[in-house]
Image (cartoon, rainbow, N blue to C red; front, top):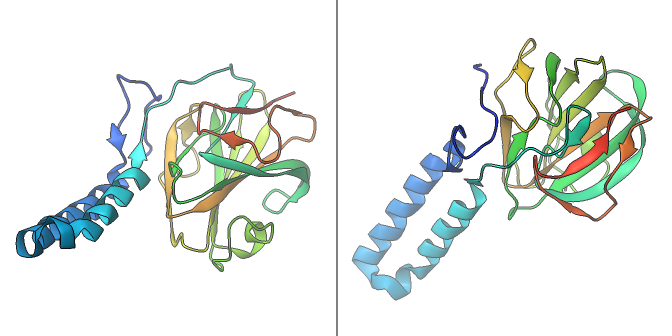
Length: 223
């Protein structure tokens, strides 16, 4: 798969405002809404227009400014912090601090790289589709994991986790890809979560329940 190569900014953002993953859904729902309006009038067609507006907001994908420096760990997704806890990284078999971001259907679902680093390895694991807000989703649900290594040698595991409604994880990078902080690397359709497994000595800058934004929010500082 090809690597996306753009640092989020107003000038270089690859898919302005609407994610490319949503274009087919927007085309279908718009055609259905227009057809319903043509045959049944605006009143009866209003549910189809509401569906179109929902799809439009779901696939919005705005550019974001990148804060901090190379030692900052940025949020890989929009959503709410549901876990900050010591955890065993199941991919690299090491002790870590896990930070989890839960995305509901009203969040932006584009996933961005949390650090400047190289993709060392990628794993895909099929699984169930339990509620992504639950802790067991991290080990039971379908998931896609990236092992990222910074220039300073810090290892970070970033895991896309499918949810109750989310049935499609998209990842556009493979081992060897170089990612910049805030760079778009994937997308999850219709509600899910992203888990970050960080070194145990990071300085956490968020709290449980806090709402965060992909790229814009600094989750932690690397040692």
